[in-house]
Image (cartoon, rainbow, N blue to C red):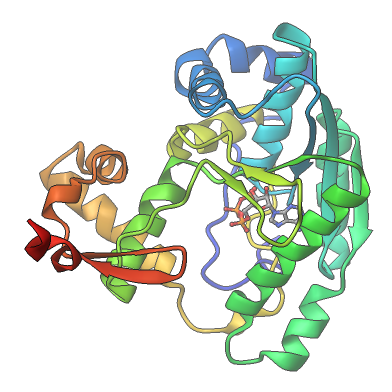
Length: 288
Ligand SMILES: Nc1ncnc2c1ncn2[C@@H]1O[C@H](COP(=O)(O)OP(=O)(O)OP(=O)(O)O)[C@@H](O)[C@H]1O
């Protein structure tokens, strides 16, 4: 396992033997009701992510986040409203054979009926963007997922980003690019008409996803990327560490970072970008 995972990838080791499918599914609405299930439902409700008649493409990479997301959607269909359709899509960017087998085996065990399709992204990125593979790969991956969702007649594409992804993105933007910009829970695609991206795990903290996965006894894909595996450090890991350290001094610092994007005070902002145009608070300051 470790020799096919990329360097610097954290390996999530199960705490125990793999639980039965029934136990895994039950734990979502019992043991993990508060920290996972309720947070999933709250995000769906707060941002009206699922509407009657929706057809949702649930994007599964085989990692812990998106596999949990798939199970949550299945539970929703079973116990909640059943007025929407689901497709579980897996884009194969050129996974190592062992990785692909592990992912298929996990999905079979978890009763997630996936549709796998090839995109060849690893090969393309390795050829055209050797120095900045991650940026190019992320862009191409998004396109490949939207394309498939559209081909299947879906109007929503669900991604497994969670609470920690949101605050890490906010901090990355602030500390490295000098702008305040977060990851949105729901977003219209500008290139794919009629398609929206949703992030139903928006409120779920990563540590609970890890507990759930480890307690279920599942080996998720940890780092399936063969292109970036040898490339230098990832800024996201540094930000993760930074937030962890800050939490030592102020335990709710993560919640404050999250809330900051909900409470921007427009009376105390120097400038902002909107629709491709930059604005300054001085633009209207002298009008009065
Ligand atoms: N190869 C893929 N096929 C389908 N969906 C994907 C693929 N790669 C990424 N995604 C989707 O994009 C989301 C974000 O991708 P990213 O690589 O940042 O995931 P991650 O943080 O490793 O999460 P996960 O644990 O789900 O892999 C995933 O949760 C998943 O929904």
